[in-house]
Image (cartoon, rainbow, N blue to C red; front, side):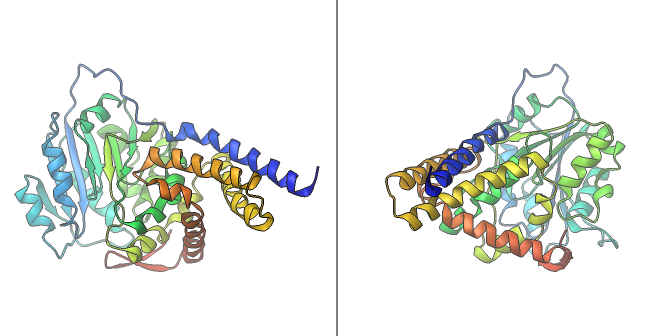
Length: 349
């Protein structure tokens, strides 16, 4: 067997191993609704979210299942965030000045939880929204403890397709026993048991570390994907925002991914890189071209589970993959250094 044939065999083996990741793309499971109806408080930390907040609040207003209250914690916004939230029926809390050692989002969530009166606390980011009947479907699958649903990514502009492998890694690194940063559903007692967001007050990726606190306290943690239930659009304000957003803590987040999953993802990505390189270096369109198309088809199937990525994104997958490697390296180099996000200077996790 020649060296080229060996590389071809290894690439196919790593490509096939990638299918072991498909269970981590499973959707949020619904169960039979419980007879009990615990009261629900929705808590939305918001800093300059006037362009996002109306869609979330309108989606909540359209849900057949109504929460007891919707609390928007206005974290020092300089736009119409607070005004729009009030106009759309939310209770608005003005966040107190940021204490030493706290990040903005955990501090806002902490204040919202203190003001909430529901049995269940649902923390959601302002750039998300619920699909029709999505809230009821999430609650019907809730079995106690801490639960999180990864939002389905709405993609509109061409540059947004560059988020593909970030979204993928975020999802497979979280499901089934981690927490997504965009959403957390937890009962009040479990939240109190780990001292809530105070225990992760200095973290950018508070969800990763909060999941560890819940597990250490014996609180069950589970998650699934949110296609048809819960959605978002990440970084809609341009490529600069997208790069800054993924840079601020993604490398640290990767460090929290279960080791076995991380090794499997790395192996799969090696296959994705070898396929086009083998084609370019050998010019063998019959064999390496076929392997490349297999990789593209697999990427296409995976991508549709997590977002509205187009067919051409899968066909041209080396572009978002190289972008992923470049921004990941940038994130790793900036870990522990000062970065700017939403007008605040913060130290990256």
